[in-house]
Length: 505
Image 1 (cartoon, one colour):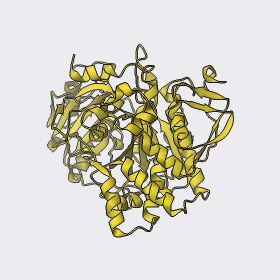
Image 2 (cartoon, rainbow, N blue to C red):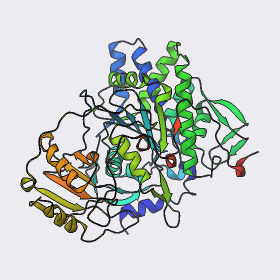
Image 3 (cartoon, one colour):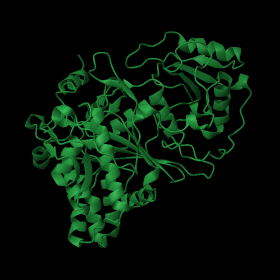
Image 4 (cartoon, rainbow, N blue to C red):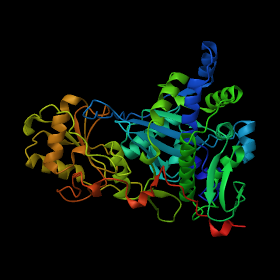
């Protein structure tokens, strides 16, 4: 058994890890701290001090460098991966999180949310992926000691242990095909400090709840949670829904939405001491990618986020299903890829976007017979083996369609959806020509620095036949908005969390 497998098994199953779950990340708290940092009235030396508090790590440790496509106005979306670390490697985090046996263990990223700010800055979509999702973790080299962790499969929360947040970013891009521009990671203590600084967040439960594992105990109705109680809410698993990580994720979404509404309703921090305290807490608690130079960048990001009205904020959970045996979850076929595609295509998950303007005209395509196309088999998934010979079959189909320079690449490239990647904008037209010939949607054409020529990867969505089974997005309403299985929550919705009947009092 490999060292990675040993470490994965060491985390235990979903029940054993219940006390570690749901750890700690609210993008709204981060956004608030960003804004405060810009209004604290501090001098240059103090800002330099705050900059020095930030911990910085490489954005990605993987080879798959994804890029956005611009909209008609030349603007691009912004994607920020928000991570909650369950580290117990400080006395304060240990006090808040318990589990002294975990001291010294590499932390897990038990909360993972992608915040997508649309190119037109009119909407925000937040995508959570359950921590027990089985994924392909790409090869990652630890920047601290140059240890190379080979590609393998594992639960997505363990990706943090193979080089840090840059490996989690690489794993997300491998899973979703969505470019990630920045990451922000926070620990237990950071959440407690920021919850205290903003004066608490109103939450609601539909019955009395007591979860002995997280320590949360609330009466039916609304309560404003602060400090450690806020952390308990975010970590509670058994007390909500069906007692799994899925219910906890919805409770986290409710918390985030409530904080946004509270801030937009006029909650203010005017005490200079609290402002300074929050600035210190926020910067000391944060680990960010090295593309964020300092607090000024955080302030600018916060300014962009705060412009979006609450009714255009949508939070979803990746559509999922249990694996055989139920020890982990996997992306739900069709629905998960639809959510990924909507975000890649910069279409809001609330389904309220106006039809997009036509994108800028791409470079004209070369004649089909002059376009080199590399074809790879990507049909293997975490639950299904590869369909042998798929790359060869589709290579022959391309040649029949006139692409005489199509060639099979023996390298596997497992992924959910079929894509046509191209290395530079001048080859976009060629990639579109390949997509059109095979009946693929235009959105399947993606620019990627990870390829040297037009490269077709036959994904798990096309396991048989010569005709692509999907269909291009028509722009109709039924093609917009997240599927029901994503459990979407709108920023304006004020709801009470469903309490697990086994944990009432």
